[in-house]
Length: 257
Image 1 (cartoon, rainbow, N blue to C red):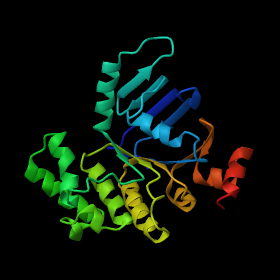
Image 2: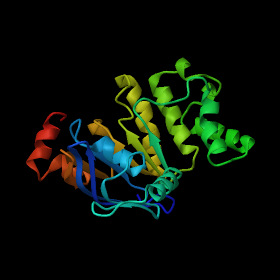
Image 3: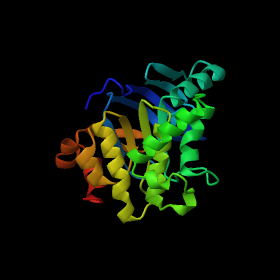
């Protein structure tokens, strides 16, 4: 699905090490505005690190990331200006939301306060406008009756939907999800995935790290299979699930299907 409101994302030859370990080994990836891209692969293959690099939460060792016209670039042979890198990373985070596995809601704030805080503090939005927007988002994710509840009073699925609403409060061009349902009981997974389906229908650019293969097959525009810091194969759900070309993809999917 193409949308003029979504973010275009381009990754070229992205490399990242943790100590002596090569975590990302030359990633090339293009995400069209409005598309939902799912990253799959075994634990430790670099999926979460890729997301964190996309959101400027980790510095890349070399390569380039371009999101919504803002470029993060580093070269192995050139000393980088980290102040400039950090400035651009902050600019990217203003347009790219991140939803984590562990929700990361402020426990001492109500849902309404959680969703209102960032637009007021970061974007200097008027408090009344931020509260109005927060209430609209709570309706969007089906939590309008829980505006005055604290995170500890909610189920895991409700907390994750609140985390999505908090990300949406910053009016992002794209949202990145790092295993958004892995901490949830199976009967709560559907309610979170349904919010993501709705955002896809509305043209939000989304990149999702998940082991929910049925969701990937039914909703994704593109699927990217990673192993050992490299992209093994990518294609449409039909291509990946019905006729994967790489034996490593076939072997990985046999564990789920």
